[in-house]
Length: 256
Image (cartoon, rainbow, N blue to C red; front, side, top):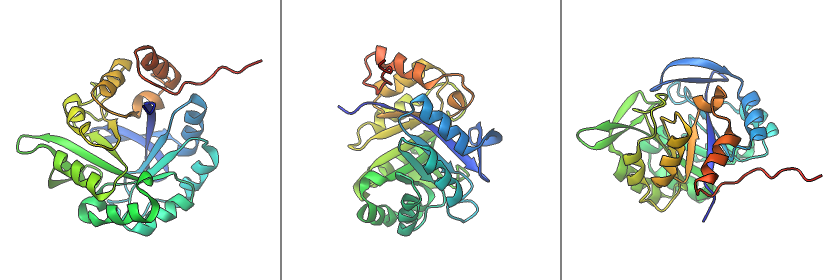
């Protein structure tokens, strides 16, 4: 059984890491390079960078900070934002990313998922899916950084992404994002029926929330505010999860 993963998420806007609540009221939290260096040292399993304004501004992810981050990290990292063509995957991978995430472009052109998987391998293709609870369809899929609703219901869309060749799902509950009230466990239990890994995102506020998400079927847990502000150090969280039966990669003490 693969080890569960703890993943900090860095939303990048204009080359700076930002964070808000339910995708609004963004505040500056620092340099992506500095935070990447810190998370590498703290023992994060991976890092995700999302260029949150790229799709809205109709541009690709800026390569400068991707290259800078790649020089600093020894752990895998994924990059998303403004990915709209198969060649965007090869471009970002060549600049040092290990995985590439897409959201808006996959909805606009689902065949892009299949093309990307054929070009670079499913293991490099992350489908990011932002959802809100909706009385008509359970959870509705949103694009453009959470600003535009679609006609897609989340669960059928997740199955379609799997069929198209996505290697992993980054699933964000917009209702819970930044609230610190816990992950949407009902959503995660439904998503856990997939055959590909699911990263839980949106709502973590304390150690127990991460455990609940993993027990609900998530393969990895992602957070931003708790990690960025140092409220919950990653080593402490991983020890907590390990002590409660979750298989985690823990840092080995240095031998003398």
